[in-house]
Length: 298
Image 1 (cartoon, rainbow, N blue to C red):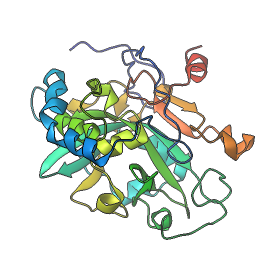
Image 2: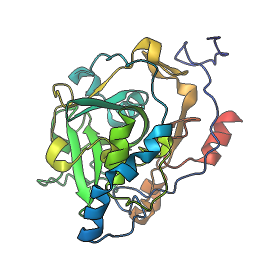
Image 3: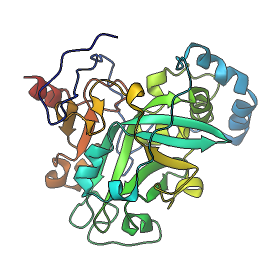
C-alpha cells in the first residue's frame, strides 16, 4: 500500500486521512441534553422489537469486516491514565475500547472526547467539589470508568483522570470488531421500522456507543480499566493503525479543538472553553465544528 504524504507535527509518523463529507449528527451533551431523538415505545412494542431480532440483523450483511481477526494491542496502564484531564482527553484519541460481550470481543477506536475538569468547571458533575454516590468514580484513581444513566434509559461513559473530580467523556468511536453485536445493542431501542444503521452511525454519540458496547451503570461503572478483563482500553497494533495514528497518539495536526456540546445554559465562560477534541476527517464524530476545521486548514 503506497504511503501518503506526511505533515509536519510533533508526531513524525503523521499522515493525512481521507476527508469525510457526512452530515453532522446534532447530538446534544450527555450532561445536559437529550443525546438521541428516540420516540418512547411501550413495553409491548419493545418486546416485539426484541422478538424480531432477525429484522434488526438484516443490515449487518452489508457491514464491512476485517479480512482477518484483529490483533490485541497492549492494554493501557494506570500510568497512562494518570494525566491531567485535557492531556488525557487528547491522548485517548486513537486508542481502542474493548468490551467482552458474552465471550466475544467487541471494539471501537476513540475519535471524540471532552474534558470535564471538576472544581470550577460549571458543566462538570463535580463542580465546586460536589461529591455524591453517583459521581464517586470521578474521585477514584485515574483510569476508573464512570458510567451513569440519564433519563432512565441512556448511559454515558467517562474515564477518571488526574485531579479530584476530573474525567474525560468519550463522545464517539469508530467501530472495529463485533459490528453485528453493536447492531443488536443499538437496535433494541430503535424498533423494527427504523432504517438500517450504517457502520459510522453505530457509535457516533455518547449514548450510542454505550448501547453498541453494552456499557451500563450496572455492568461497567467503577471498573478499573487498567485491570478489568471485561472492559478496557488498549493501544492499536501497528499494522492496524489508521493514517495519522501512531504510538505517540493522533498527530497534533489532525486533532480538532472545539467547544463542548450542549452546555450553553451554564454560562458563556465555560460554554466557550475549548475542551472538546476530535479526529479531523473521521466520519464517526458526533458533531463537527466546520469553523474550527476551516481555521486548521487555512
